[in-house]
Length: 324
Image 1 (cartoon, rainbow, N blue to C red):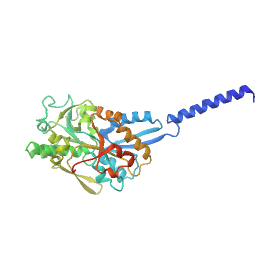
Image 2: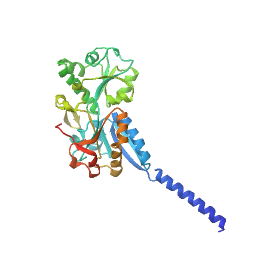
Image 3: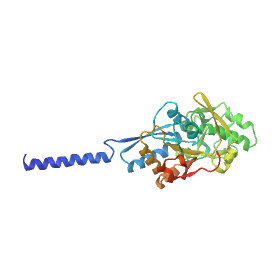
Image 4: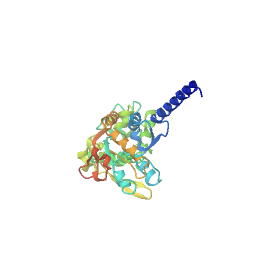
């Protein structure tokens, strides 16, 4: 072998090795996949968080799967599917439906509130406000949407808002009129109502404030006694109760402030990567993304029992005070 051939071969080897090293560091070789089941109302913030997280951890590829929160839990508990992170729009679903067989802990990382979303196409959109919204929705020519309470927390929260409105306004007929309205449209996830709203097929939708903000919708803000946003009113919210169906049994859900929860299920395959994602989400950059998407970031995150939380995350949590 001539000296020239050796030099050329060495140069080619260096190029190949450099390419392999780059491909490995960039995640093209032996990528790691992080599977995330999540509530539909978290789609936009989680995709943004995932994009920023992947810049820091290029070998980790995010795989997001959106559904209603109850359905997301059932994928694990009923169907035996595996994911590395589970995000729900109602934290209580994790201890209520997953402890101790499928999960051991939950972190509460963000809050939200219920609103009535609408567009320029909505009937009586120039009339509706925070004092007459239930009268507008009760009109026979108005169509409004809510999600399925058996699939999505926004669905049972819509029913809770209606129950609380009856109490707050001192008019029991509000609950019956709105919960049985003939032009009610129900979809598995609240985000599935957005296309109907924007096309004018429905006039109004019970949505989270963050979803209305993310999709540039108009919305009516409701009194704190109704919108499920205020932690100090948790006893008041508890007056509203909705029973949902989980498989062959019924689960009673009481009204409570809207708090989002995350856990790493027991069947997770990439626990270390999942831990890293949670730490990034709770960092200053992660919390900024959550806030920009209309949710209120909570830091330190709340948890029902700090002793159950993995040691790697205990520095990021505080105990949730008060009974739920």
